[in-house]
Length: 176
Ligand code: AMP
Image 1 (cartoon, rainbow, N blue to C red):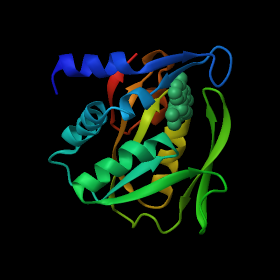
Image 2: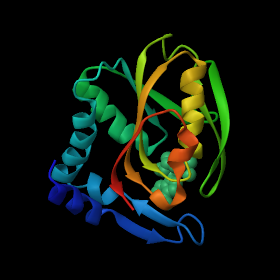
Image 3: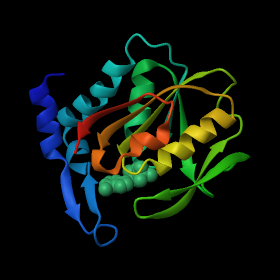
Image 4: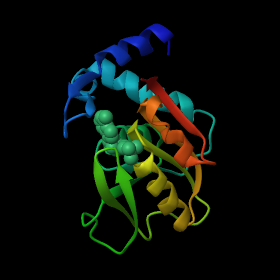
């Protein structure tokens, strides 16, 4: 995608100050989602990055990672696995606790969601401090997944979340 198109997408993300807590500037992607062209373009950014890779499953992070992750999985014709906040998955789970830019939480994955050795791409809307995705990486590896990369529509570079992901290749498209 052209640098111009990416800059347009970047400009359309809405900053909401002091949400959900004072001092946090929330990056609101509903401004992308509500526009068919922008939504398609944002999904295409992920797809371009997946081209040529052997991928078995996409893991999406609760909840906005589901929006992009499931669209990407559908287009690639591969499975989609939801990584959910504690208490939402009905079957047996593996779990990992983590800290957020604005709080603490625990992530869960169904124990049979990923087969040992399957090639996985992790998708979320935004990389902030990296706590959420670091716990996702832990969970994917715990169940035997071969994580090939973690992809984010948005990266808040000033929070250095990449550092928490260590050996996982990180890709992001709209940087702030
Ligand atoms: P973190 O664990 O700090 O990298 O936070 C990443 C997760 O929290 C992602 O699932 C984001 O959707 C959400 N998040 C964190 N900070 C923000 C922000 N400033 N704006 C929008 N979403 C955020």
